[in-house]
Image (tube, rainbow, N blue to C red):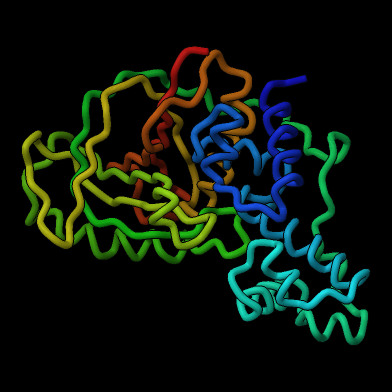
Length: 296
């Protein structure tokens, strides 16, 4: 069995054991042996859900089953399944199933097709077999990325808002570039990373930086942020087509190329690298998508 598939199966078992216990997404990724960013991609490719979305759906589904078969109070069930309050549970339940817990208990009617039964090996997706996009393996120096940052909900999550947040971030940042310290290369960069658990406001949240690479020692003044990206080996893919289709390139990179390569995902953010090929971001758009890698 492929090690990626094994890691997903182990995490599924841990999720089932933890439906009524606190568990951090970072802990699931660590147990699987990957960074949270990388494991999100692996998990989504195999299950069709992001890690946070699957955990949330499983808790709501198990809670619905318990509401149907017991007379326990709604609050006690909500707290068991790690919801902070009756109100928080009711909002999540309504959003998932188009019915409140009390309405479901009274009528017995629920959008069961929206529930998420526990996955088993037979129900995991098979990784696609098609191949395309041969990357360039290159060494990047230390980057000092100065720019504007914003939080967004990752693609594939039910509440995904990346196509709303990220373009607006670039619309704010690009007019600022002539006023910034001189860039050290010709690119505009995008970098995405997972916030620390203590900073995250949503299980599928990421932090994105639109930036240029500036000289070492440059200081960031509000509202700017400065991220230091370590030197390392990267696989550079060329995305061709509308920016809105970048998710397809990312899914190929993590779902097809990386599992079949001689590399594993390294530390550090994944990068977008844009130059004059970017154009208006439409059908003729091209830019680089880079992931840090290490030998297996």
